[in-house]
Length: 299
Image (cartoon, rainbow, N blue to C red; front, side, top):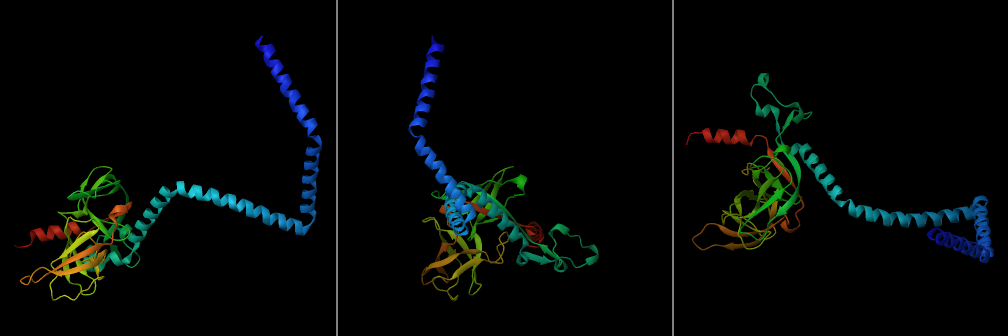
């Protein structure tokens, strides 16, 4: 019974198709002839061929643009990662953060330098950069931390400095094989040596604990000349941070009291911690040597 039913259904479907074609046969014939005429005009007439080509290119161009916009949106993650890796490579190539091999070793006969970190001028790279993605970022605690998706397997070590695209972020305090914890500048235990760009007067950058992206610059004497908008950079005393990295700009200047010799300076952080996505972990290859020497110095 079911086979008979389906055979009737197929018969009526075919019958309807033939009836549809028969009813609109003239219209379909017209469309076919119209397409043939247009194709002949385009093929054998240069002006029509040019017009058709322009129209086709405009149409396909709009379609391609829409498609590329959609594809670009879904590829943003890969694009950002590629840009971060490329920036890390460029920072590693900067000759600003290198030491002369001659200055590091008095006796050239016994100079041993990793040739992979040595450029054609004989300079040895002092800092190495590692791009990392931020996977967690606290902003509302008294002591804020950032988790990044790079760890010991990637060469990350404790005490390495961390910066963003616009300025410094903090330093590494804990490392696992695949992740690292960064003490943010927005932490009461954070201390970074900084200086005023115009006068090179050194001070200490800390967090007041009130607002994210707002820091305090302490130990700047009242004899220093400064004004609102002055640039604050990492100093040559930073140790793990390269000298001259952006910290922020002076937001407000106040005198603590008449007896104090120092200003109370508020700094607007150049790093926007609310939108932090990628960071660069910085390794000072000579920091451990410096610290070892300083600990053995006579007290």
